[in-house]
Image (cartoon, rainbow, N blue to C red; front, side):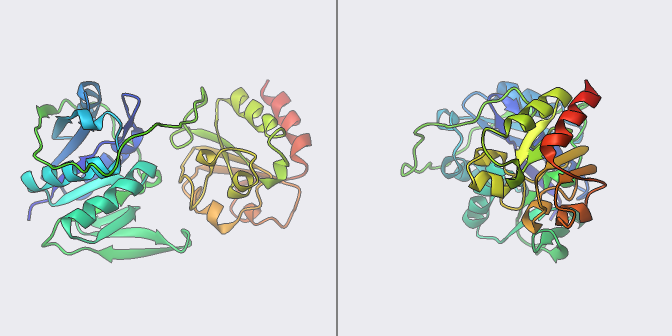
Length: 316
C-alpha cells in the first residue's frame, strides 16, 4: 500500500489553525506519495486556499456542506470516512487538539481500525513514538501495514509547515449519510485579544499560588505587557480562578512556546506533561522544594506579587 496521506483540516472562524500545518510536517516524515488536506465546511474556499499554500501539500479537497456550518464530530466523521475510502488513503491524520481528540477516534471506529494517538516522532510510515504515563515515558508503537492507519499528531512536537506551496484545490462531493441524533445548539467560546495559547511563542501561566480570580489580573497584565498568551494549572482552573480552556497540562492544552513563565505553579506531573516541549521555562514559586524547579531553566524563589512588579518594571 502506498503512503497516501489524508489530513483533516482544523479551523476556526474561517481561519486554518496552525495545528494543520504541524500535522503536515509530521506527514512529510512518513515518506508519502501524496499529502492531501480535507476541508469540511459550509463554504471552505478561504480555508482551502490557506491549506493550499502549505509546503508539502499535494492537493486540497474542499467538501462544502451546509451541515458543516458548525463542525461537529458526529456529522464530520461519515464524510471523512467516505473521503478516506474513495481516495484509497493509507493514512488519515488529525491534530491532537480538542478538535482532533473528539473527531479522530470516531473516524477510527467507523473504519474498523485501532488508532494511534499523540504521535511525537516518526520512525517510518507505520512506526512511531508516543508519550505514556503523562509524558514521563515514551513508547514506540508499530501499526499494521495492511489497513488504514488513523492517528493524531502531537502538535507541540512539530514546527508548522512553511507557506510556500501552491497545491491544487479540488471540489469534492461526498456521498455520506449524516446522523440526525446530534444537532448544534450554540457555541460558548472565550474571546480574547491575547495570542492563542496553543500557538503563542510566549506564555505566562498562573497556579493555585495566585490565590484568587481577582489576583489573576497581575498575570493578565504582565502577559499583555510582553505580548504573551495566558495559561493556568489545573489547580487554578479547579479553584475557579480562570476558565478551563486556559488549562495547560495532560488534561488541558499541550503547548510548546519559546518562553514559558509560570507563577505560583508547583509543577505536578500532569502540568509538566503539557510543557515538556517548551523552549525556556522560567518558574517563580515561594516554595524552594517545588517540583517545577527541577525542570525550569531559570528558577526564582519568592513571592510572585513581589517579583511580577519587578519584572514589569524591567520590561517597561
